[in-house]
Length: 300
Image 1 (cartoon, helix red, strand yellow):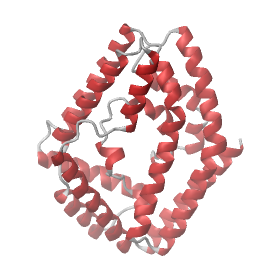
Image 2 (cartoon, helix red, strand yellow):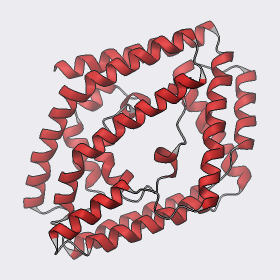
Image 3 (cartoon, helix red, strand yellow):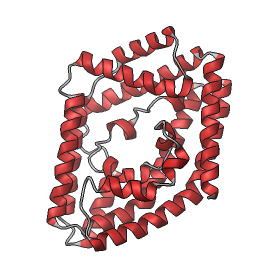
């Protein structure tokens, strides 16, 4: 069941999405998110060469020279990803399918989350220097474009995770988790939905804390972009920023993250125990279908 629900450990949920999530999504969009999106993996993957620039254009209008640099680096990146990473994704999903077939335990869930984090970090490491170089070429107008869009992202986050009442947030979270789980299992039973409802009630809401961390991270990013006239200083500061995503975290946020992480693992185990044979087969088949998609894509 670990493959069926979103992780809420440090990286995916709590890291201020600011630009790590927005810009590094240029790479992370090619991870298992493709499989989890409910869309055709092969269809989307073979169109990343125009999907990624389309996404980037929401944040910044590039000059002709920047577009040429970006396109060249993206082509090399996608070729590397297809040949080097996709076979690893296929092997990983096959392994998860075997474990789900037998029933997951806490140690296996921890290993799945750790491996997912390793795969994601590999993408960030591979694209970091290209990202540093590209952002080092931006002008003041482009910086303003970037932060105007980030502020729009912040407003959307605030509306969804800060302004809504606690009851509304829990109901939305419950709907999202049910929809997400059912992509993997098919329809849930009444007992399973009830367990998800209990989980949503125990989940520690952390919208304001994460919002403050987002803003702190974005403030640091803007400060670093102002250094781009000193290339070596700028590059070192940017690497440090990416390596330290916990900027703006408070003890309260850390405590809520630890609490919620344990809740998610408990939920994985509870749901795994309640899977019907039909649900388990549905999940195993889906994992293996995605593994086969990745194998085919890696050979194209």
